[in-house]
Image (cartoon, rainbow, N blue to C red; front, side):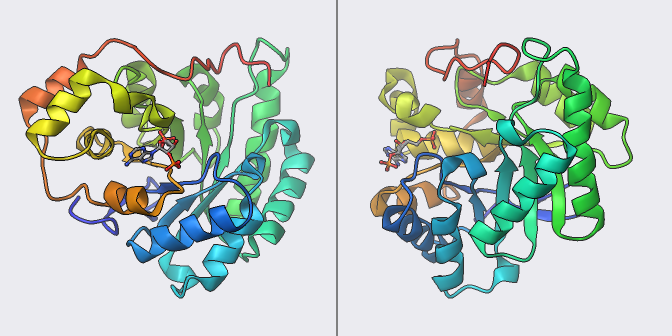
Length: 282
Ligand code: A2P
């Protein structure tokens, strides 16, 4: 990958720009709209949002006013947990499309799996959501579909359906590499995206990462983003600060050595979100 517009090819052949711009916790309104416009000015072409972020209208405004053609952008959104199931997912999708003011979506994800912890019929619920997503995909209104925060046992049933997930978006950063899930995805040709590639900022004060970043004259944020790419994972860094948005886009003029990759890959868990898809009750 040499630039923001280079792509990973999904298992249905659709191409996805290799770094996405995250919008989780970007406050609705001008702050969010301006950050997305700034990101597009800096060369990002892939924007990641979700219904639950509460900022789809602001992202939609940015898309409308950014001066870049819709076809050149890759837009992702996600169906929230309260909307799981067939009918509710279809309705949630319409609301997302109306809020984003779009007539097609590039990627739509199930935000979190229904799990055995909360639901006896968790698998049936996930399959109901997936049926709706599959229909929308077949109709051409979504170019690719996938999941987020799914562990291998949540993915199993979906893998046996007619349309298999193309993406799994998981928490991924130094100290939290979710090896089993990544391995399962790689074996099944599911592209892995990293949410919180900077650990929602928590990676940035780590001394070890700081020392490695210093060797390349880059920031710890740039190191973490590049680290994802060199592991074949698609990072989704978020920022609402113009200088950081620009900084996070500059990850193609250095390469982390094999030795340093090995050191980062070996880091113990130190600062994740602590969220576990199997036991969350939201
Ligand atoms: P802000 O949005 O105020 O600029 P993640 O992508 O892992 O979710 O991390 C996002 C967090 O990291 C946000 O708090 C964001 O702050 C901060 N952040 C993003 N990029 C940088 C950077 N280059 N330097 C320092 N902090 C950053």
